Length: 116
Image 1 (cartoon, helix red, strand yellow):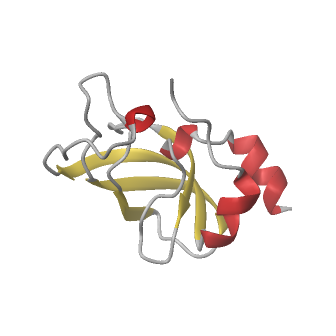
Image 2: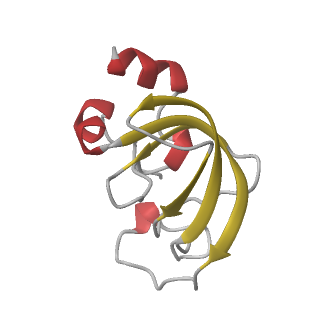
């Protein structure tokens, strides 16, 4: 069973950039990492998904500063992204995507409401 998302109010302070965006391209995908001892975060193959370098096309900036395109890192996690993946992206000051499930962690309207 998958772990529930982290509470938005716990993660939002770590987000220096929050954007409504869509994945333009996956630039690179790292090697599949070994299992970490956290079965709830594994894929069906018993592993986690690798790190990815991605380019986002930004529709709107909700917090911070971002150009029309933003290159970010999807960390080793239980999810992958592909071109066309869209939603609310919370990014830390190192350019790493926050949230256990990336843009699927919290609905865009909930992120917008939390930022008000």
